Length: 204
Image (tube, rainbow, N blue to C red; front, side):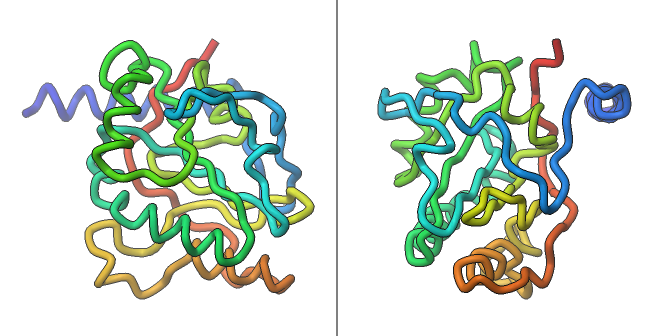
């Protein structure tokens, strides 16, 4: 147990150091999305970019994975989130940027299996060299980045305020933000702290 705790602290330290040393970008609220034309492989086999998936009112880019315990708590809400986004004419892509595990339990084959088991009804793409995660400043799985119709960052952070249970959600940050941008209204809460596992990214 002590060894696991030490390893966790070590991985967090690496992640913090990478951000501090400028190896990873960081989009701020109001910034334009970048690398939106980069094609990534979906679990269906097609190649999709953020531009391809964008809809009339914008797009949600959600960093996720197969194995993080926080994702496992939240992902039953992903299909409902997709339906909400569709209703408000907002696109949605889910990216697996865990480069260091793309040859093991985060491989494309593992992603296909996971997506099928969980009934994923949205693009689940492999950010093969963590290019999007590094450009956006994605920190955790999950970590949400919502862009409006002008591809300006309108919200980033957690999906809602209760990863453990949908029944306990008091603030649906992401849904509220989607509703706001679709109605051309100001987003009330533009940024929250992401909660999840660190992205096992490529740093060089």
